[in-house]
Image 1 (tube, helix red, strand yellow):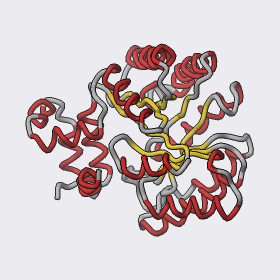
Image 2 (cartoon, rainbow, N blue to C red):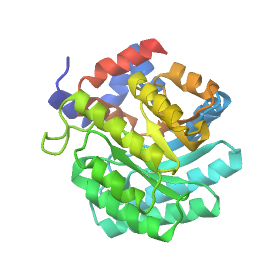
Image 3 (cartoon, helix red, strand yellow):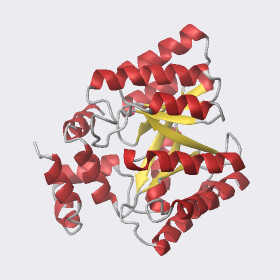
Image 4 (cartoon, one colour):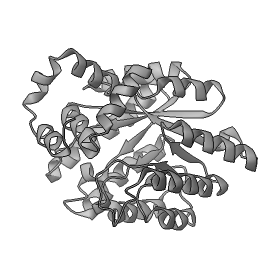
Length: 306
């Protein structure tokens, strides 16, 4: 199996994109998990997702934002997406990564850029999810979210927490006081044991604990997982506590466990699919594998499952 360092090296070789795409398996994998390079392709993917009874969230890929002007390009892209949602009538919101909006250049730049998106989404009665990235920007991401949440409503802007981080339970308790709509996922970045649980069991146990805290709060949250055990734990807790199917939603990534996506939708649960697209799919795809090389097997396994 390829090592993490090898995958990171490959992710930086943008020139390999066209070469790699010539191989049928690689092409099948990327087209399965990436909706395409253009907004038209992403819209088409979301139409198909909606037809299966699921909602969606746009996720524009760009891993090379290093200038103020490039962050403005991201703002324009997301304003275009919000307009497209209105024009096409598709059922979707948007997900943003603050590093694409300048978080590592200046936190205030990211705040101002993100504010432009949230303000437009509010006008259109849509919703913006602020995604979570590596632990080096966790606090900065939460700080920007809190600024936005102080200006906008509960149903205007939300945030993501990752159960593999040791700090997440405390973050969840603090954010629920505001309150905040939270998307809970496990997290997949390569983190030191001092900040993240190294063992899957601990990550899973924390996921269940935070999930229960979120569902019991009475606020509408997103339970993001492809793990049947986590899904079962969520359903069992909700049923035991008398929490309705419309009080939360499940969330998954485009192309992963479509069988589970469709089953949950048929069972009456909210099901939202995150749809990544953009010209920078190659570094995104390779870096996701690099975060945990075991993801290669995960991707292949889910490709075979359907």
